[in-house]
Length: 115
Image 1 (cartoon, rainbow, N blue to C red):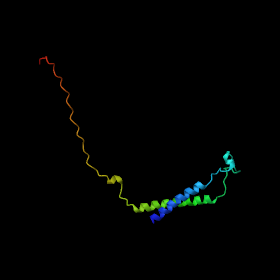
Image 2: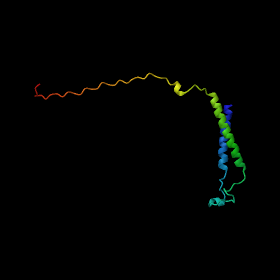
Image 3: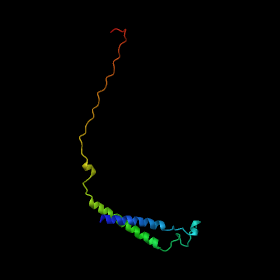
Image 4: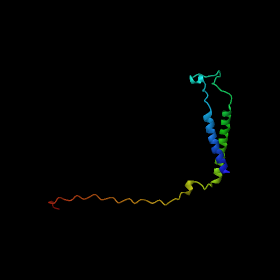
């Protein structure tokens, strides 16, 4: 079942990429090339839904459904064994040995000096 949903998901991904790349932009007409709105509407040109836009909507919905389905199936297969912090072994803390301080060297008296 997981393989079938994964295959459907990959096919949907490729189909969605192709359909989005085949669509033309909102301002693809001649007026849009020179900065014009190209229509009399307030928010710009908004044509009727084409076959490509409907296919994009269906492919996007199918992509979301298969994504959620794959996540649910993957969570069902993996066994949760608790937190990572619970698994960590508490090793005894070893204190580092601090080296003893080196005594300062004693000055040697000059060769001709008496005690």
